[in-house]
Length: 425
Ligand code: PLP
Image (cartoon, rainbow, N blue to C red):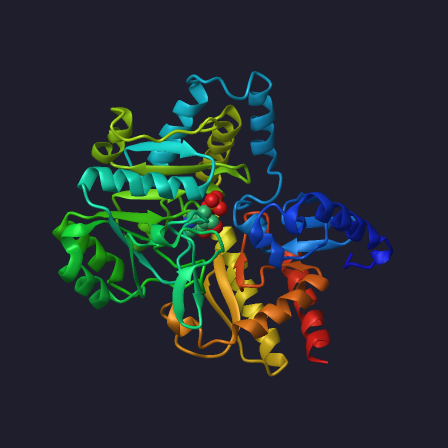
């Protein structure tokens, strides 16, 4: 059913009005200020159902976490069963041991793990560990990569200049970060030749999914790995999106480069709020000795670790990766073909598990070249796509889940076609 029962549209409007009374902007994460104001009643598999009777094929997936689809039965049941016996103890429990073992074994190269609630926290824990281990303060990071919303990582580009993205953000907290264009090994080498002895860590999304879903150039990750070894720098892969989405061993496995630390989140727990920092024993055990502090009341709750155990077990026992890739490829090709049918320079690139849709034909390898595309035009189209029953983000990133099958593909392509017909008319 494609959004025909719209007579109840006032329910979303009414909830929106009420939300605005009590919640700044009507949303609890500023990322959602830019999204649809349709209220969701429920979600199952690859579908969202609104309070106004609309349905959506979901390619936003809660910004990535719903890699197993919405409300995956085995995860929801495992969490609710486990939580009947308590949620948080201020002490240890067996599920967190199992979750730690499973994730480290799945990731392959990691000896140890610490769970947290959000990717933002996991990234901060990585910085602290790297600084403690090296006795240095500065961190190299890259244009367009997102590492959370705190003062020392949140960045915006305004009129070609990078700076704090928010009023109230302490600009000085960005001072310890050296910002470089990504995918340019010479830039990294030059920065290290200048400041190598002061750099504690290099952090990056090993595939820049947040801005354009751009893959690393051949040799780039390997080159950064070598440079980090030469200068005694901790290499951090922020796999909050790519982890468990690209495969059990994430982008590190896909590109064959092992970092010293990696952050995980999103797909690790079937939609539940869990993140993690993993790494080798030598580094990670600095938390264990108490030399480095990492804390959190809700870390490794029964809910979180039951969700991790059920999700990762499911990914191991019934790997969805080929299915997801197949759906993603067919979807990418379908969107491209439909766009061509309307004479539009639609550009669909990336990986089938996470791809990027925009307009233009520039050769894109980093944030700067990404700006040559017509991103605003896609953002405008995204509003029409939502109106036609496709739940997508305005920034052009589409996520595919294990719950997307032929029915969803047919619905998505039909809806995309209708949306383009309406948008171009
Ligand atoms: N790192 C990356 C690569 C992310 O994409 C995100 C969130 O989208 C984060 C860190 C922050 O994670 P969270 O929103 O769970 O704090």
